[in-house]
Length: 224
Ligand code: U5P
Image (cartoon, rainbow, N blue to C red; front, side, top):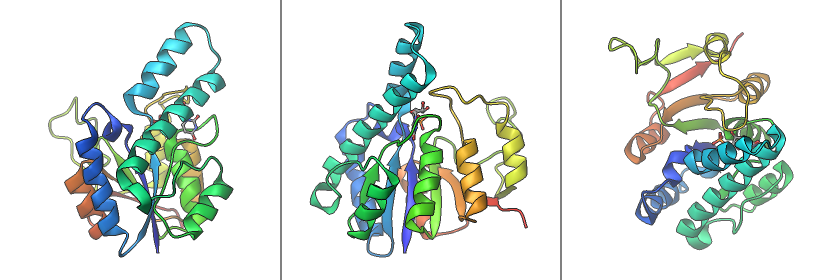
């Protein structure tokens, strides 16, 4: 059985290689029960490139391509940490991801196509490899009933209807580098293929718990 994990770009930030080694050993432990297929986010480095080029007047799809390149570099960092247990480079198409996954190694990809975020890509990857589950490992532990930065009484939800999540996210734009919890492509994809999806924290302890137990994070409830 396969598990697709979108790893927040934050994981690849300035913390040094030690952190990635920890993620790599987690993934190797997990690979004994599930084959992990990872999609690396772009994080603040992608945002730096995107904002810089946008202020030079670059168009949005060019900015998306820069974001994709950074997410692939992030993917390569994790591939280095995994060594020969990983497919040796970030696949660049869904076809290549499927072929790589069929080879049995841990696969680490970045983004694929302009116009979406790595969340959308990860959902498409989950669809293509027939993943048993899709975990969106992000900066927050899950979805809250109100903005936890503004409201102390905000509560994390164990489950959220897909439609409600869509309403919450509709305010966010689709500009390059936009911070989406889940983008439109990811919501459409998990809906059409009924992919089990959870939003969970990306810190290593939470992620390990989330992989081992289905009660961690926020489960997206699909309609019908
Ligand atoms: N991006 C794409 N397509 C992908 C993945 C990423 O265009 O498949 C671009 C977007 O501009 C995105 C940025 O905002 O790279 C960094 O990815 P993320 O960290 O926002 O997911």
